[in-house]
Length: 174
Image 1 (cartoon, one colour):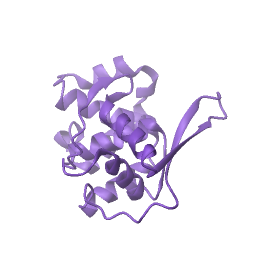
Image 2 (cartoon, one colour):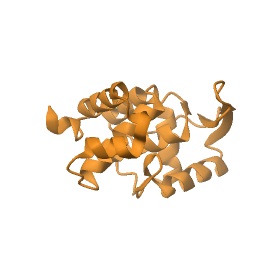
Image 3 (cartoon, one colour):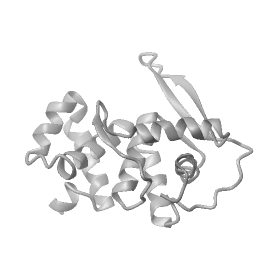
């Protein structure tokens, strides 16, 4: 990869409008971008919330250390659970996109930045099950792994996103 990993984080945030809520959302956007050919160089494994990259976590830490982004924490009103909010530093130079040089990929970030994090988790997981694990009955498997998160409405929305992106399993069904 010719772009430093911390710059990948910065470019994703810049494409999202300078702010992105949730570490899960950032992980899933990066994963889906890579499936579309963005080539971050991050390696992914399956973890609790679907495809996960330790490389991306390290890149977030580095992006903070280099003063590119800030991570703050807020709490959900419903249950007090803590979540991350990522923002580009106000004094950061405007981004000359290299990792996301393709405007289509920047548009994908804008689109996904507003999608519910659980829906993104389901979309990335469905893709992972088909593309990486090659699970024949991926739908039964995603329901087994995700339980109530995989409600029919959320799963349908996740598949709609994959269809828009042209990624399996939804793209294969179109």
